[in-house]
Image 1 (cartoon, rainbow, N blue to C red):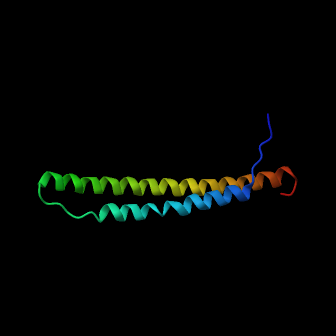
Image 2 (image 1 turned 135 degrees about the horizontal axis):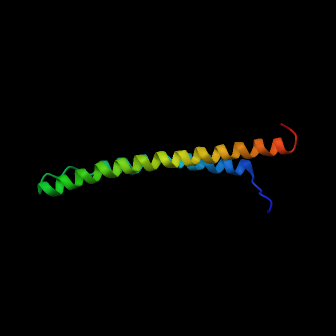
Length: 91
């Protein structure tokens, strides 16, 4: 089996970046929700309201998933560091 080479600081940085970018989905949700109400025709207005609702819910779930990915990536960085320290007898 080949060597596994990981730079924990790069992994931690990537995780922080991923987690930070998740918040940008809020901007998209605000933009979708700022679309005006449409009352005529009624069915079009209802469809637009449903679209906003579902899109917002989906974007919120996606944001949470991206944040979790970022945290998991940062956690992997910590585990790599701890494993490396333990294997080298420093821990």
